[in-house]
Image 1 (spheres, helix red, strand yellow):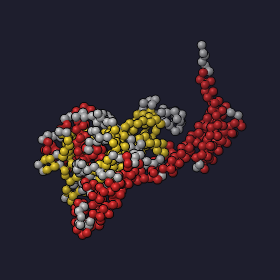
Image 2 (cartoon, rainbow, N blue to C red):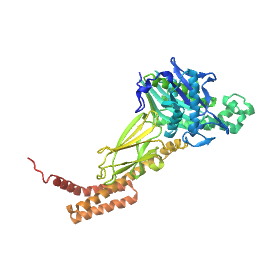
Image 3 (cartoon, rainbow, N blue to C red):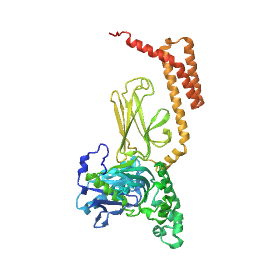
Length: 543
């Protein structure tokens, strides 16, 4: 049996609601679907107009708004006719909610909504806000590939390692997951929020005209104007190749070979394309699973998850963080707190300290990315922790905690350990991650890995050297009387040697100079310790 978990801080009582009050929604780029789980299976809801499988289109006086989901990383920017991506999503969700209520004959208050695995915090929060404005409480946001895995029943008995290949109208996601001894865990994810069926359509139309587009999508032989399956396959190849490159990276992230994959599940209407199915089969060296309708499988998974969260069903969903999260430390270095592909929900704490004597505040800069330096990563939020007692550099202890909930949203807090001074922030950036940067983040991290690490070691060595110089010069000002003139001159000469080494930008040279300075300074340090002990106990007697 699987164990149930809820997002951190959630009220488990609310999950006791009737399962009939919660639905699953696939808020798609091209189409949006509402489904429900009952009588042991998931199904698309139907009303008097037919199945709740409706185009994600907003009709305005200026024309139709399409593919607004692609703008969810900038949710409040006006697209057209006063609509933003957020208000467009609100409108679509409200329409689905109203139709679902008519189909079921009662009100709907709760839903599980699917999002692309690579949606950032802004897009995820915007999805929840749109649902709230539409009158829906979001029980959980669930990544689309994870929903597809649930729908295929990979959480109810099948064991093995599976790839979920999800190419929708506007986004591409791939997830690699395992089912082992009752635990359903995502090992790695990849994706692109600006890669989908819309791009395939554009390529076909560019080469053969929009009039041929519908027939081209059906991939029939001897299409008009000479468009055959072979030509169609060649036309779509650039898009398909991009998806397979992302799949290869996900396999690498999961440390798996193609031979270790037990099955490939195709999700999304674009995967009906014969050329794509052939390419995926060739890449993974196995025929993909297509038992369920690729258009509906994500909605089915969302409906199943809604049922599980409202009926005390036992399930363990271990999704993952798509991009590493960390904070800035001295020298502009990134200290990663939560590495990419860490299972969520997750909470990790790490202790930090002050750099200068008497420092009473620390600036917390939260960043996202795979590089070693802040300048190469994305800034998410900044806040300050004040009220730190003045101490020697390195004496204070500040605990920084990163919490990512089941929806993938981040909260960062900082607490000074001696006073309990506390500050925290929810990361809801006012701007989204440029979609093209998703893959470039990973690509650049691999291309610059050696260079970044060498620079990180160099900066760390410089910071250590500067701290050592500062500490010794401060000690000399306070306790020079403990040394004779030659000893003082020797220390000052060694300090100068470290300063000269810093100018050479050679880590090993800097380290050697620091080691030498530490060795020369050791007798001085021992005298200072002895003096401090003597002063502390000089007026005390032992009985």
